[in-house]
Length: 270
Ligand SMILES: Nc1ncnc2c1ncn2[C@@H]1O[C@H](COP(=O)(O)OP(=O)(O)OP(=O)(O)O)[C@@H](O)[C@H]1O
Image (cartoon, rainbow, N blue to C red; front, side, top):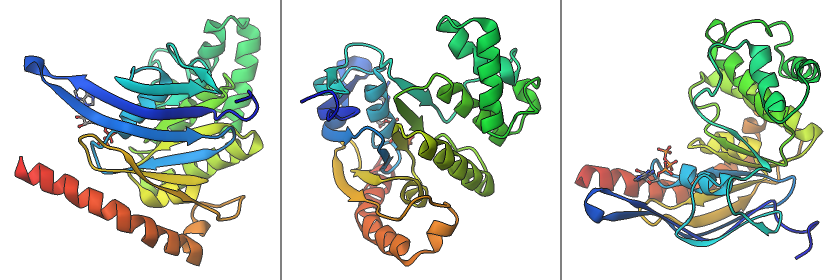
């Protein structure tokens, strides 16, 4: 496989097992296959606890699979995935640094001179609509504004891959939509490979080029893969009104619903 055609992220036969107390082990994900092409936006959806974050952590190099191959742009991943930027559900901002300093820090750590890092951070804050908020500390920002800073913090490092784990989870519905549109605007300008974990099927369809569904755990696998051919640019509020959106939603939900029900039955049995 040549460099240009290699997938940005390729997980082949990925199995992840966690060691539990008493020498037992829990197989969270079993022989999952997933590829994200360069420039492609892929959303992973599945019932709670099925292993979505686990797969993302494997792609980030934070978790080593018990079996399977992880390749990043065709190269085996040995440690941390240096091509990836990671946006979590929880804020990852330093509370003692201003918004501007929080965005600049990633470049400074990588060796960029402070003045240059600060100037770039200001540009990124402006891109996420927070140009006038650079001197505020995280506690002086709303949840949505903190997410914008987090997004700028990831994008300033120009990663080739963006890994997002329910990044807009804690936000209210309106702010989620605004953040979704902001993300699509920034992504369209300079398409990166995106792997986006969400439990929200509507959000997944509205944002992604492909939606993959994971089965209920344990030993979760990828059981469905749908291409979203809704035209771009998309407004993630408007796109939900479209007939094709509803058709696709109905189709995917048939598969997802069965897995969600399995998860709830398992929880009741416990
Ligand atoms: N360090 C760990 N040790 C033991 N079990 C773990 C560990 N991390 C995750 N698990 C288990 O692995 C399974 C998958 O977890 P994961 O966080 O990947 O699920 P998820 O699909 O992201 O869940 P959610 O949608 O609720 O965030 C869960 O059953 C979880 O309890």
